[in-house]
Amino acid sequence: MTSASLLIVFLVGTVVGALTGLVLGGSIGTVYLAILAGFLGSIAALFVRNTIIARGAGIGPDDSRTPILVIIYAAVASLAGSLAAKEVLDLSEISSAPVGLGALAGLFSAFLLAMLMITYYTNPGEPPMLRKRS
Image (cartoon, rainbow, N blue to C red):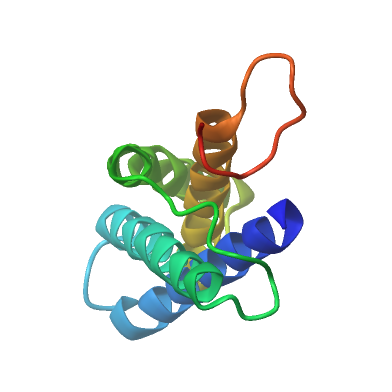
């Protein structure tokens, strides 16, 4: 269940970030594009993950909805992921590709979101799992 949930978050975050880069590529600056792509990618990843888990689409019962606190922290963490993606692309000297910037910003933001979800649900002494706190 944890692996499927994380794959959903990574895939949706990357795709939404790339689509944001594709749509807004030439109209705004790279910093703003990275921030917007990361933010939209992480919020869309949370929404899709919660929708798929809630409907029980073969992944499992609804036992790991993302709390509001994690969503707020993910929105703040998407800033760090987005700006890290911009710096990576600047160092690799391929920053002229807005779709790549958006995809990387979405992926990095989704990665930080996944770490936040795992940390929130992990109890000391137990293996990391995404489940409801008791």
